[in-house]
Amino acid sequence: MNATGTVLLLSLLGAPPASSSDPLCAKREPCTVAETLDAGKDSRGNSLQVKRLDLGWADVETSSGFIGRKFGPGGRKAKGSRANGQCEAAEWWLVRSGQPAQLLLSVCNDGYGAAGVGQDSVTVTDNLFSHEQTGGSRERWSQSRTVQLSPLLPMSESRRSSVPSEGEAKEDGESWDFEALRGEVARAASTCEAGEASPGERLLPYLPQVQVDKAYLQGGWKTAGLGACGFEAGHVLLGNQDDPKDAALKALLVAPDTLLVEVHDDKWTGPSAKWLADDHVELWLAPQAPQELTGCGKPTDAQKPAQWGIRIADGQVFPAFGSPKQTLQVERAELPGKRGYRLLMKLPPFKGIAVVYSDSDSGKKQELMLATSPVKFGRPEVLNPVRVVPAEEATCTVKNGELAVARGPVKKTEPDVAVIRVE
Image 1 (cartoon, rainbow, N blue to C red):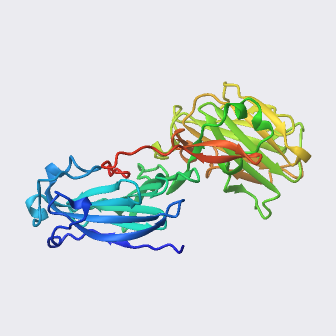
Image 2: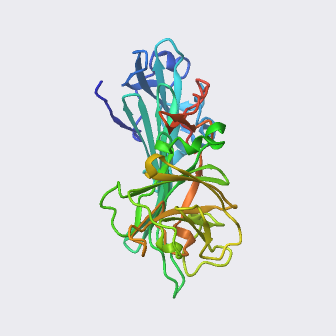
Image 3: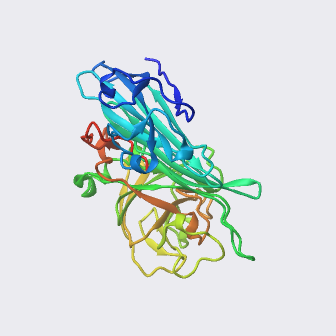
């Protein structure tokens, strides 16, 4: 089926039409079904529909208790205005054959900020429902969520805020894809004191921490790859990655203190007298979350990261920047045909992390460096923040010799409680 979609903007002008006879509107005047949208079919071939209800104008204070659930039968009017403390109430419902209707979203738009131009935008496509809410005045903000309709599962979410500054907006935010286990934190360029350099805009990818099967941790990691769960290093710090087969790096946290790293290379070097010239992994850990740091000036002692080098050839660990006293425990497994290695590392406590693979085909110098974040030597504010994935959202299980994302069980949701909760 070709996906069909539409964007609905809540009107802030005038009153809704006369009340509807639809069962969703029974004893709920004022109420009308403003639009019915095709949302494709479920796995059994049954049609899915999304209905938008316009519920008139509600008192802002009273309506706040209904946001995120079905509006009560009273306290709303067919006419009103924001100037009189009113907001425009609306609901979106999922209608499925043989099942009770499910509330997807309920809102009451009072303009969402002093500027009074905030909006709720909804997009319905094949088996997907997306909502974006915008608002604010001088500081503008938006938040969006997408859910799968059958079965009901969260798919993505994002939040953004921006403030005008010297002709351009400074934007902060974060995003997360529940299906791919990928996301990032965005931080605008910090305003620093005189004489302190700003790190500029930062886009910091999350390094996911995901629960895996106990058997995988007890030895399965030596034979099954990180697959789609492994976070692939996408930042080239040195050299050019002209051929992805030359070198590649994946990393995945499977517990607060346990990191798995998978390295592929077409030529291995080391061990030698100088570990920096050997193929090695570099691990950076910091005591504070990078998105909470401004990056202005030099990091304090409490912010400084620590660095270790782990040589691929023998798994030997070398303390590096910061002269860390903590010892890393490293286990190493060789992939068939020496095409790669997998490392299991036990880590000391941390809040920021980055993993780097240093490739040296010549065995004389570092020639290619791949990293999980935009690493800058000794700078904690550009490491990866950690995203802890609750088991009810997703886990990683072995499938066809590799880890694959397994979505959590579908939560039972009360029909009158919204699937998307607007904060």
